[in-house]
Image 1 (cartoon, rainbow, N blue to C red):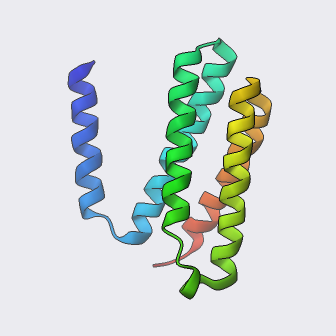
Image 2: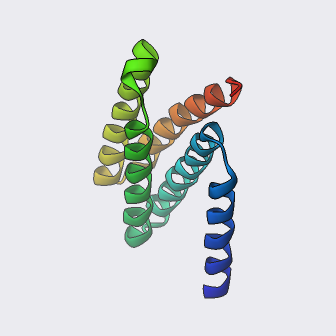
Length: 123
């Protein structure tokens, strides 16, 4: 298992180094969706350690997405994304606190919408 984790880390590092800024955001969305889905599964299974790990990962990614916003150039779009990330953060925290996988699924669907919209933008 450790070798697979190391390979995955190297693969991710390589893809990150070769990606343009638009692709990096896509990768963050992919990781966010994965973390949220895994957290939901962990809640349903009662796996508190995995839930905590995946929620922490999702929150870290949301922070990264929000910190990448350029409010000077992005204007109202950046403000809307900031609000959306704030909503996702609040819902993720609440779902983790309450062990509510349905609430987390709703937040995940909102994140899917953001991810899909981002993929429609051409760099």
